[in-house]
Length: 103
Image 1 (cartoon, rainbow, N blue to C red):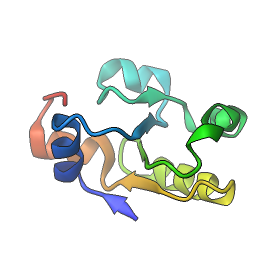
Image 2 (image 1 turned 30 degrees about the vertical axis):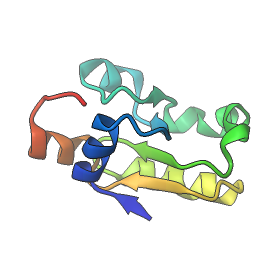
Image 3 (image 1 turned 180 degrees about the horizontal axis):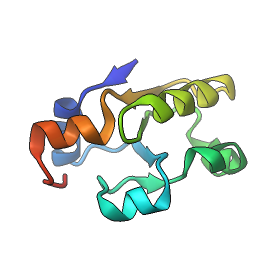
């Protein structure tokens, strides 16, 4: 199940608790980020053990456009994570909706 930028912005503004992961590359994260934990897609499989305690927690993944985070979502679901949501449109959609405004 995906999440859109408006819902994500509202939930971040409300201080809701969920695991928030950015699967882009470090240089992309440095240019602009939403404050998520950076785990590049290429490192995700080797970092999955760090997330073991969150198998049943809500996890929101995002990337630039939603493609890499869609792959991350599938990888995590295959590893038994039950509530992984992909940010539709990623950072591109965020910037379209809110400009360079951070959460």
